[in-house]
Image 1 (cartoon, rainbow, N blue to C red):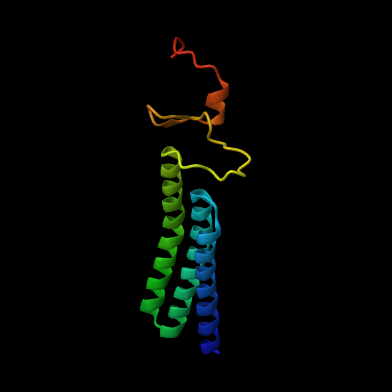
Image 2: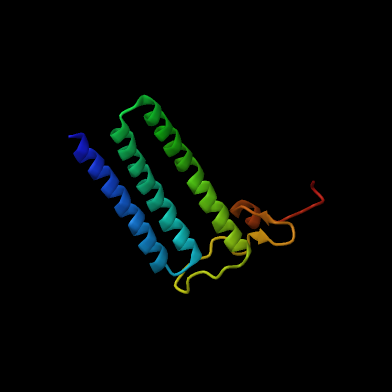
Length: 129
């Protein structure tokens, strides 16, 4: 029974990692590539690590696997966000079929300040401050 679980988790993890690689090659711009790879690779690596924990059947290995999975779940979205933000700030082009650029007009290149929607709608009056 454990052999079937190990084969199932590791195969499913490998499939997700393969799909992330295919998605990376097929997506038209940086932002979509970041999205597809972050989600699929995180799930794929997590499943492979679960298979490793089942294979070794040791509390020490299982606790390390859980710590690694938690670390990946916490850091992968942050890393993807930073790469996406850096790409946007370097003015990497969006895909030509992108319908809406939600950050357009909200970023000041000189101060590196990113305004929220409320700040953009309110008139700036510096005499009140």
